[in-house]
Length: 322
Image (cartoon, rainbow, N blue to C red; front, side):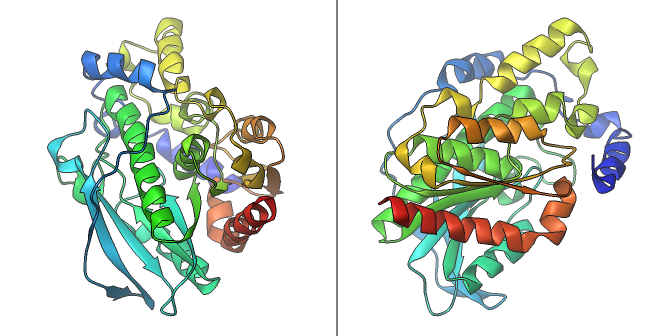
Protein backbone atom coordinates (compact mmCIF):
# COMPACT_ATOMS: atom_id res chain seq x y z
CA UNK A 1 0.00 0.00 0.00
CA UNK A 2 1.25 3.48 -0.86
CA UNK A 3 2.11 5.55 2.21
CA UNK A 4 -0.50 8.21 1.35
CA UNK A 5 -3.19 5.54 1.25
CA UNK A 6 -1.86 4.23 4.56
CA UNK A 7 -2.33 7.64 6.15
CA UNK A 8 -5.85 7.76 4.75
CA UNK A 9 -6.59 4.31 6.17
CA UNK A 10 -5.54 5.34 9.67
CA UNK A 11 -7.64 8.49 9.46
CA UNK A 12 -10.72 6.72 8.14
CA UNK A 13 -10.46 4.05 10.84
CA UNK A 14 -11.21 6.82 13.36
CA UNK A 15 -14.45 7.84 11.60
CA UNK A 16 -17.07 8.49 14.31
CA UNK A 17 -20.25 6.35 14.26
CA UNK A 18 -22.43 9.27 13.09
CA UNK A 19 -20.35 9.51 9.90
CA UNK A 20 -19.82 5.84 9.15
CA UNK A 21 -21.03 4.18 5.97
CA UNK A 22 -24.32 2.29 6.25
CA UNK A 23 -25.00 3.83 9.68
CA UNK A 24 -28.71 3.55 8.85
CA UNK A 25 -28.45 -0.21 8.34
CA UNK A 26 -29.75 -2.15 5.35
CA UNK A 27 -32.47 0.37 4.51
CA UNK A 28 -35.85 -0.09 2.85
CA UNK A 29 -36.40 -3.88 2.47
CA UNK A 30 -38.57 -3.33 -0.61
CA UNK A 31 -35.91 -1.22 -2.29
CA UNK A 32 -33.18 -3.74 -1.55
CA UNK A 33 -35.31 -6.66 -2.73
CA UNK A 34 -36.12 -4.78 -5.95
CA UNK A 35 -32.47 -3.99 -6.60
CA UNK A 36 -31.05 -7.51 -6.59
CA UNK A 37 -32.87 -8.88 -9.67
CA UNK A 38 -32.30 -5.58 -11.53
CA UNK A 39 -28.56 -5.41 -10.87
CA UNK A 40 -27.67 -7.42 -13.97
CA UNK A 41 -30.54 -6.25 -16.17
CA UNK A 42 -29.93 -4.32 -19.38
CA UNK A 43 -32.93 -2.11 -20.04
CA UNK A 44 -33.67 0.09 -23.07
CA UNK A 45 -32.42 3.67 -22.85
CA UNK A 46 -35.50 5.83 -22.25
CA UNK A 47 -36.13 8.71 -24.64
CA UNK A 48 -36.24 11.51 -22.07
CA UNK A 49 -36.49 15.23 -22.79
CA UNK A 50 -33.29 16.97 -21.65
CA UNK A 51 -33.46 20.63 -20.71
CA UNK A 52 -30.40 22.66 -21.71
CA UNK A 53 -29.52 25.82 -19.81
CA UNK A 54 -27.95 28.94 -21.33
CA UNK A 55 -24.33 28.89 -22.44
CA UNK A 56 -21.93 29.91 -19.69
CA UNK A 57 -18.18 29.96 -19.09
CA UNK A 58 -16.31 28.22 -16.26
CA UNK A 59 -12.55 28.56 -15.81
CA UNK A 60 -11.94 29.18 -19.48
CA UNK A 61 -14.35 26.45 -20.62
CA UNK A 62 -17.75 26.98 -22.17
CA UNK A 63 -20.87 24.92 -21.82
CA UNK A 64 -24.28 24.61 -20.26
CA UNK A 65 -26.18 22.74 -17.60
CA UNK A 66 -28.47 19.81 -18.38
CA UNK A 67 -31.44 18.41 -16.48
CA UNK A 68 -33.78 15.46 -17.01
CA UNK A 69 -35.94 13.10 -15.00
CA UNK A 70 -33.86 10.27 -13.60
CA UNK A 71 -34.78 6.79 -14.83
CA UNK A 72 -33.55 5.49 -11.46
CA UNK A 73 -35.90 4.23 -8.78
CA UNK A 74 -36.14 4.54 -5.01
CA UNK A 75 -34.53 7.98 -5.02
CA UNK A 76 -35.50 10.74 -2.59
CA UNK A 77 -37.48 13.60 -4.11
CA UNK A 78 -34.43 15.89 -4.26
CA UNK A 79 -32.49 13.34 -6.33
CA UNK A 80 -35.15 12.55 -8.91
CA UNK A 81 -34.06 15.37 -11.21
CA UNK A 82 -30.79 14.33 -12.84
CA UNK A 83 -28.33 17.19 -13.31
CA UNK A 84 -25.20 17.42 -15.41
CA UNK A 85 -22.79 20.08 -16.63
CA UNK A 86 -21.45 19.95 -20.17
CA UNK A 87 -18.13 21.76 -20.62
CA UNK A 88 -15.62 21.95 -23.43
CA UNK A 89 -13.09 24.14 -25.23
CA UNK A 90 -14.33 27.50 -26.59
CA UNK A 91 -13.58 26.39 -30.15
CA UNK A 92 -15.84 23.35 -29.77
CA UNK A 93 -15.14 19.61 -29.92
CA UNK A 94 -16.26 16.56 -31.86
CA UNK A 95 -15.53 14.15 -28.98
CA UNK A 96 -17.34 14.15 -25.64
CA UNK A 97 -16.97 11.93 -22.61
CA UNK A 98 -19.52 11.19 -19.91
CA UNK A 99 -17.57 11.57 -16.65
CA UNK A 100 -19.02 9.82 -13.59
CA UNK A 101 -18.35 10.98 -10.04
CA UNK A 102 -16.07 9.48 -7.41
CA UNK A 103 -17.15 8.54 -3.88
CA UNK A 104 -18.25 11.63 -1.91
CA UNK A 105 -17.69 13.88 -4.94
CA UNK A 106 -20.03 16.84 -4.45
CA UNK A 107 -21.16 18.82 -7.47
CA UNK A 108 -18.62 19.24 -10.26
CA UNK A 109 -15.55 20.77 -8.62
CA UNK A 110 -13.75 17.49 -8.01
CA UNK A 111 -13.66 16.78 -11.75
CA UNK A 112 -12.96 20.34 -12.90
CA UNK A 113 -9.21 19.92 -13.51
CA UNK A 114 -9.61 16.65 -15.38
CA UNK A 115 -12.32 18.20 -17.57
CA UNK A 116 -10.08 21.24 -18.24
CA UNK A 117 -7.15 19.03 -19.23
CA UNK A 118 -9.39 17.03 -21.55
CA UNK A 119 -10.72 20.23 -23.13
CA UNK A 120 -7.13 21.20 -23.90
CA UNK A 121 -6.92 17.93 -25.87
CA UNK A 122 -10.15 18.69 -27.74
CA UNK A 123 -12.48 16.53 -25.64
CA UNK A 124 -15.65 17.93 -24.03
CA UNK A 125 -17.05 16.44 -20.81
CA UNK A 126 -20.56 15.82 -19.51
CA UNK A 127 -20.22 15.75 -15.71
CA UNK A 128 -23.12 13.95 -14.05
CA UNK A 129 -23.97 15.11 -10.55
CA UNK A 130 -24.17 12.00 -8.40
CA UNK A 131 -27.60 11.09 -6.99
CA UNK A 132 -27.82 11.98 -3.26
CA UNK A 133 -25.00 14.54 -3.59
CA UNK A 134 -24.72 18.27 -4.24
CA UNK A 135 -28.02 19.76 -5.40
CA UNK A 136 -29.46 16.26 -5.26
CA UNK A 137 -29.07 15.87 -1.50
CA UNK A 138 -32.19 14.99 0.46
CA UNK A 139 -30.80 16.73 3.54
CA UNK A 140 -28.25 19.56 3.19
CA UNK A 141 -25.13 19.27 5.33
CA UNK A 142 -21.62 17.95 5.54
CA UNK A 143 -22.36 14.36 6.58
CA UNK A 144 -22.22 11.60 3.97
CA UNK A 145 -25.76 11.38 2.57
CA UNK A 146 -25.52 7.62 1.98
CA UNK A 147 -26.82 6.06 5.18
CA UNK A 148 -28.10 2.64 4.08
CA UNK A 149 -27.07 -0.23 1.85
CA UNK A 150 -30.25 0.17 -0.20
CA UNK A 151 -29.50 3.86 -0.83
CA UNK A 152 -25.95 3.02 -1.90
CA UNK A 153 -27.03 0.39 -4.39
CA UNK A 154 -29.76 2.55 -5.95
CA UNK A 155 -27.40 5.52 -6.05
CA UNK A 156 -25.03 3.51 -8.24
CA UNK A 157 -27.75 1.94 -10.38
CA UNK A 158 -29.41 5.31 -10.96
CA UNK A 159 -26.12 6.98 -11.91
CA UNK A 160 -25.46 4.25 -14.48
CA UNK A 161 -28.93 4.63 -15.99
CA UNK A 162 -28.47 8.41 -16.11
CA UNK A 163 -25.01 8.03 -17.64
CA UNK A 164 -26.54 5.96 -20.44
CA UNK A 165 -29.10 8.70 -21.11
CA UNK A 166 -26.30 11.29 -21.29
CA UNK A 167 -24.21 9.11 -23.62
CA UNK A 168 -27.20 8.64 -25.92
CA UNK A 169 -27.91 12.39 -25.83
CA UNK A 170 -24.32 13.18 -26.87
CA UNK A 171 -24.45 10.57 -29.64
CA UNK A 172 -27.62 12.15 -31.04
CA UNK A 173 -25.87 15.53 -30.92
CA UNK A 174 -23.24 14.16 -33.28
CA UNK A 175 -20.35 13.60 -30.86
CA UNK A 176 -18.04 10.63 -30.75
CA UNK A 177 -18.80 9.43 -27.23
CA UNK A 178 -16.63 8.12 -24.42
CA UNK A 179 -17.26 7.20 -20.78
CA UNK A 180 -14.85 7.63 -17.91
CA UNK A 181 -14.55 8.17 -14.17
CA UNK A 182 -12.14 7.75 -11.31
CA UNK A 183 -12.54 5.08 -8.60
CA UNK A 184 -16.30 4.65 -8.04
CA UNK A 185 -16.85 6.79 -11.12
CA UNK A 186 -14.66 4.42 -13.11
CA UNK A 187 -16.64 1.44 -11.88
CA UNK A 188 -19.90 3.07 -12.96
CA UNK A 189 -18.35 4.07 -16.30
CA UNK A 190 -17.64 0.37 -16.79
CA UNK A 191 -21.31 -0.47 -16.27
CA UNK A 192 -22.32 2.23 -18.75
CA UNK A 193 -19.86 0.96 -21.35
CA UNK A 194 -20.92 -2.65 -20.85
CA UNK A 195 -24.62 -1.91 -21.33
CA UNK A 196 -24.71 0.60 -24.19
CA UNK A 197 -26.03 -0.65 -27.54
CA UNK A 198 -23.70 1.63 -29.54
CA UNK A 199 -19.90 2.01 -29.61
CA UNK A 200 -18.24 4.22 -26.99
CA UNK A 201 -14.66 4.79 -25.87
CA UNK A 202 -14.25 3.52 -22.27
CA UNK A 203 -11.47 4.80 -20.00
CA UNK A 204 -11.73 3.30 -16.51
CA UNK A 205 -9.44 5.00 -14.00
CA UNK A 206 -8.54 3.28 -10.70
CA UNK A 207 -11.71 1.20 -10.98
CA UNK A 208 -12.72 -2.21 -9.73
CA UNK A 209 -15.26 -4.56 -11.27
CA UNK A 210 -17.63 -4.08 -8.32
CA UNK A 211 -17.98 -1.99 -5.15
CA UNK A 212 -17.49 -5.22 -3.19
CA UNK A 213 -13.67 -5.35 -3.16
CA UNK A 214 -13.32 -1.70 -2.08
CA UNK A 215 -15.67 -2.07 0.88
CA UNK A 216 -14.74 -5.60 1.93
CA UNK A 217 -11.01 -5.72 1.19
CA UNK A 218 -9.88 -2.12 0.70
CA UNK A 219 -9.48 0.80 3.06
CA UNK A 220 -13.20 1.59 3.06
CA UNK A 221 -13.93 -1.53 5.10
CA UNK A 222 -12.80 0.48 8.13
CA UNK A 223 -15.59 3.02 7.57
CA UNK A 224 -18.55 0.60 7.73
CA UNK A 225 -20.95 0.79 10.67
CA UNK A 226 -21.10 -2.96 11.19
CA UNK A 227 -23.26 -2.72 14.30
CA UNK A 228 -26.01 -1.01 12.29
CA UNK A 229 -25.98 -3.98 9.91
CA UNK A 230 -26.30 -6.48 12.76
CA UNK A 231 -22.68 -6.89 13.88
CA UNK A 232 -19.37 -7.76 12.26
CA UNK A 233 -20.21 -11.46 11.96
CA UNK A 234 -19.53 -13.92 9.11
CA UNK A 235 -23.25 -13.97 8.32
CA UNK A 236 -23.52 -10.19 8.03
CA UNK A 237 -20.31 -9.98 6.03
CA UNK A 238 -21.55 -12.68 3.63
CA UNK A 239 -24.86 -10.89 3.14
CA UNK A 240 -23.14 -7.57 2.48
CA UNK A 241 -20.75 -9.27 0.06
CA UNK A 242 -23.68 -10.81 -1.82
CA UNK A 243 -25.43 -7.44 -2.19
CA UNK A 244 -22.32 -5.47 -3.15
CA UNK A 245 -21.05 -8.07 -5.60
CA UNK A 246 -24.47 -8.28 -7.26
CA UNK A 247 -23.29 -5.06 -8.93
CA UNK A 248 -20.50 -6.46 -11.09
CA UNK A 249 -19.23 -5.56 -14.54
CA UNK A 250 -18.32 -9.23 -14.90
CA UNK A 251 -22.01 -10.14 -15.07
CA UNK A 252 -22.38 -8.40 -18.45
CA UNK A 253 -21.02 -9.85 -21.71
CA UNK A 254 -18.31 -7.64 -23.17
CA UNK A 255 -19.62 -5.72 -26.20
CA UNK A 256 -17.15 -5.24 -29.09
CA UNK A 257 -16.30 -1.64 -28.17
CA UNK A 258 -14.79 -2.69 -24.84
CA UNK A 259 -11.76 -3.76 -26.90
CA UNK A 260 -11.06 -0.03 -27.15
CA UNK A 261 -11.02 0.36 -23.37
CA UNK A 262 -8.01 1.78 -21.55
CA UNK A 263 -7.79 0.76 -17.89
CA UNK A 264 -5.44 2.65 -15.57
CA UNK A 265 -4.67 1.30 -12.10
CA UNK A 266 -2.17 1.92 -9.32
CA UNK A 267 0.20 -0.85 -8.22
CA UNK A 268 -0.12 0.04 -4.51
CA UNK A 269 -3.75 1.10 -4.32
CA UNK A 270 -5.14 0.78 -0.80
CA UNK A 271 -8.74 1.34 -1.89
CA UNK A 272 -9.08 -0.78 -5.03
CA UNK A 273 -7.31 -4.16 -4.86
CA UNK A 274 -5.20 -4.75 -7.96
CA UNK A 275 -7.07 -8.00 -8.63
CA UNK A 276 -10.34 -6.05 -8.87
CA UNK A 277 -8.91 -3.89 -11.67
CA UNK A 278 -7.22 -6.82 -13.41
CA UNK A 279 -10.54 -8.71 -13.48
CA UNK A 280 -12.04 -6.13 -15.86
CA UNK A 281 -9.03 -6.44 -18.17
CA UNK A 282 -9.47 -10.20 -18.31
CA UNK A 283 -13.22 -9.87 -18.91
CA UNK A 284 -12.78 -7.34 -21.72
CA UNK A 285 -10.53 -9.09 -24.28
CA UNK A 286 -8.32 -6.67 -26.16
CA UNK A 287 -8.58 -3.90 -23.57
CA UNK A 288 -5.41 -2.08 -22.60
CA UNK A 289 -4.18 -2.30 -18.99
CA UNK A 290 -1.80 0.41 -17.77
CA UNK A 291 -0.19 0.14 -14.33
CA UNK A 292 1.18 3.22 -12.57
CA UNK A 293 3.57 2.90 -9.63
CA UNK A 294 1.67 4.58 -6.81
CA UNK A 295 -1.48 4.55 -4.72
CA UNK A 296 -5.08 5.63 -5.07
CA UNK A 297 -4.51 9.22 -4.04
CA UNK A 298 -1.13 9.70 -5.71
CA UNK A 299 -2.50 8.43 -9.03
CA UNK A 300 -5.08 11.20 -9.08
CA UNK A 301 -2.93 13.96 -7.60
CA UNK A 302 0.41 13.36 -9.33
CA UNK A 303 -0.44 11.44 -12.52
CA UNK A 304 -3.41 13.30 -13.94
CA UNK A 305 -1.61 13.46 -17.27
CA UNK A 306 -1.75 9.65 -17.45
CA UNK A 307 -5.49 9.73 -16.80
CA UNK A 308 -6.09 12.34 -19.49
CA UNK A 309 -3.96 10.40 -21.96
CA UNK A 310 -5.99 7.25 -21.21
CA UNK A 311 -9.24 8.98 -22.16
CA UNK A 312 -7.72 10.36 -25.38
CA UNK A 313 -6.20 6.99 -26.25
CA UNK A 314 -9.54 5.21 -25.76
CA UNK A 315 -11.04 7.43 -28.47
CA UNK A 316 -8.11 6.61 -30.76
CA UNK A 317 -8.50 2.89 -30.09
CA UNK A 318 -12.23 3.06 -30.81
CA UNK A 319 -11.57 4.86 -34.09
CA UNK A 320 -9.21 2.04 -35.08
CA UNK A 321 -11.95 -0.51 -34.42
CA UNK A 322 -14.77 1.19 -36.32
